[in-house]
Length: 333
Image (cartoon, rainbow, N blue to C red; front, side, top):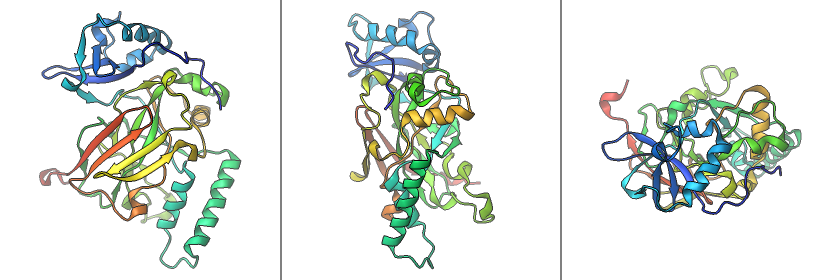
């Protein structure tokens, strides 16, 4: 696996996020344990948001490390603040079909009623397809909307039209340096850090049944407002030993539904960034979603509904908790 050139050891572990005090506006903050430092006052240039830090992440990282070790700063209690999504990206790139077992489960769940294969035969065929995809080294990536992003503890409003809303907890990568046509061996040098994303999907509208040749409808099925809870924090890559060996866990009302290692990815973080950068320019603050492991609602035969609570966690990145609510009747088109 490619390695980053960022510092591997910093004296005090820290994270970065976006916060809001009662009666105040949102601000970029440095998180050390249960305390937050308002970076608008602590840093020269008074950065207005986290993306401003990412524009020169190498310099910001050194300054943040120094602040994290300084107890004399004007620290605030974390539990007194509202936590927003850690960054507002300009672009969101989403990797699909990137976990081997997840894709096998989905394909089996979506089999036609008249499919003559047994479940075992279907699984074997799809497993062979996944192995071929990995050997061909061709990831599958599509574009998401920043407007779908919400905070890690915000309520998720299920649209009235969404009949099969599902969860997809994912490792999210936050870009810290412009990347265009970079190789896999340099790709991780462009990563600022990692966070958690829950990439909600309405399974009923994934495929265009009116014209199957069009294929998937990612706009409708994934981009409703609030369909991408993000956070709680950006954890610098220096504190994430190996993004290909993290446990991704989602609990629905306290019951574990997803509990899988990122080892099951077909294409790792470095390969995804390199692949995306061959076609697009990745900008500081952009978010790359790396795909979701097995254990989605469509597999369990249990989709999201009003009142459900999702708890998501990834090794070393903290946890998010979101509660599902129904769209108010007056807001229904």
